[in-house]
Image (tube, rainbow, N blue to C red):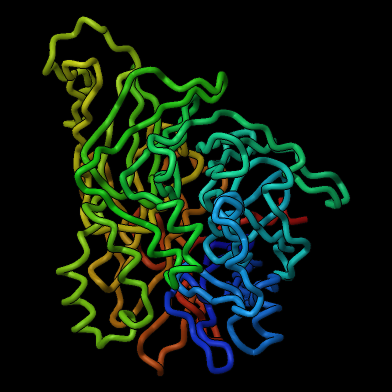
Length: 501
C-alpha cells in the first residue's frame, strides 16, 4: 500500500439503539460510537469505543433510555409537577439537550471534539478515544445549537455557525471563529475560551429559525443558506407537554423562498444585496470559491424535507425492496447544484437581466423589479451525498468532489465538475462510508492522493474492511479486513501523524 499514508482517521456515528428493554425511534438517536483507523507503516490498526458522554453514563447506569434524543422523547416523572412552571419560563429554557455527540469529529485549536448540533461537545483523546471533558458552548458564547461541519482556513483557524434562541436577547444566527492557537500547551484550558463572534444574522421570522447542517466558506466570505426547512420554536419548547419528539419540530414550507446570505469574514458585515432562490432543503455544502467578481458555491439540495423520515428505525427495518419503493416515492433525490452570486450589482440593471458573467457555468442570477436577485442554479450531478474533497482546495476554485452514490445502495463516486464525467467504485452487498481524501506528500494536482472509506458488508460471511482507492483513477490500492463488527457511520476527520505527536 501507500507507505506515506501515516495518520489516524477518526469516524463518528450512532452505534447502539437499545438499552435494556427500551429502544430508540430514530437512527440519529443511537449512542455515539467513535472508531479510528490508524495507518502506520503499511498496517491499519482499528479501535472503537462508545463516547462516554453524560447521556451514555446515565442510560447505561439505569439500563434504559433516560435522556431524550432527536427522535425519541423521554417524559419526566409527572409527580415532579413540571406543569407548575410557567410557559414563559419554558420558552426561556429551550430544553437541555443531550450530549450524545454522534455526527462528526471537529477541531478547535489542537483539540478534537465529538460533535452533533447542540450546545454540548465532548473533547476526546484522538488516540485512546476517551472523553477528556464535556464542553458547553454556552459558557463561552451565546448559542443553543452549533453545526458539526465547521470550516478550517489555511492558517488552521476554525469557523463555525450556530443558532441563539431565547434567553440571549434577540434570536439570531451566529458565525464564530476559534483561532488556531486556542489550545494551551497542557491542554488544560478550553480552546473555546478564545472564541470570537464574527457576525450575527437575525432570523427571517422570530419563531421559525431555519435549520442548517453546514455552511459555505471562501477566502473572504461565509455563505449561509436560510432555507424554508424550519424549526418551530414554540413546538420545541412545548414538545414535552405534547408528547412529540424534537424531530417533529422541523417543518418544510415549500411555498416559501430560500434566502442566501453573504457575509464578509473580515468585517462581519453581510452584503446588502438580497439573493434568493426557490424552496429547497440542504444538509451538505460541497465547496465554495471566488471567481472574477463572483462567489460560486456548490451544495447538495433536495426538493423536500423527508430525508430525516427515512431514518426512523421502523423504516430502516423494512425489507430492502419495500424500503427502496417507499423511499423512491417519498424522498426526492439529492442533487448537486452550483449557485453563483455576483459581488458587484449595478442598481440600474434592467429587470430580467442575468448578472452572471462567468463562462464556465449555466447558473443565472436574474434582476427583479425590487432590486433583489433571483438565483437559478446549475445542476452538476444527481444522486450523491456525504461529499468530500481535497481540503487544500476548500474555499478555492476546484474541479473534483467525492461522495457516496445514493441509489439506496451507496458506493463512492468521483465527479469531475468540468467534464461532468464520474468514476465509481462498487462491490456487491457493500456499504461504504463517506469518502475521505488524503493528499499525497507534495501533491500539486487536486486529485493526487487516496480516498479512504470503511466498508460494511450485508453478507455475514464477509468482514468489514478499510478501502484505499487511488483518487485519480478510483482503482483499488489496498484493503484491510477488520476483525470486528463495524457500524455504519456519518462523518470523520483525518489527523496526519505529525500533528498527533
